[in-house]
Image (cartoon, rainbow, N blue to C red):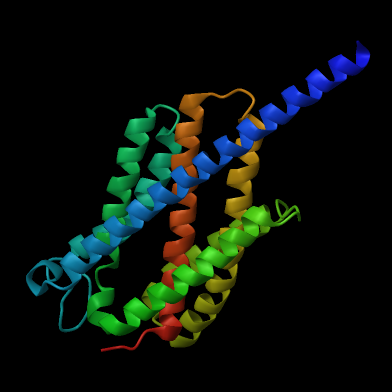
Length: 247
């Protein structure tokens, strides 16, 4: 009887493990799918505004590149929205959180539209392709590695804060040397964050899988998509400083 109970327990454990694995794959597909839609929305809005001189002139002087008041608002709008999203996520439904994410992606596209007058379209496309390949490799490593990289989190977040402060200061300084240094450090930090966030999304799902809270799982997938989306966008922008050919 003891052997029979042991076998039954082992079968139940195996079945549960298989269910968690299947759920994890579905969860990650949701994360990457939501992120991909957000990136597509960002690209379409950025291209639509950046390739239309009349629209772009609302936010920037197309001759000098200087931002108008609306341009400054568009630049800082995504930052305000991402902080607001983090504060409101618990009060939003899963559908509301997803809608907010897509609105955020559109706002990000608006803030990045200037790259189409600063860089050639070919270099933007090439940088996007390189970013996609690098992101896929880093995310795959974060998902499959047996190494616990959770300890990277606090160091990387401090690095992001430092980058943000340095970037804002350099808006007014306009120093190419400072921008070059920021770009190098930025590529390294967001490469690390891509792997770190992927592993965190996976481990968070496994930790909560037993509860099978569908509302939490849906919101968690959207938050995971937001984190990876930000990693991709920032990695792309920092790489563009090296790879982009200016018009």
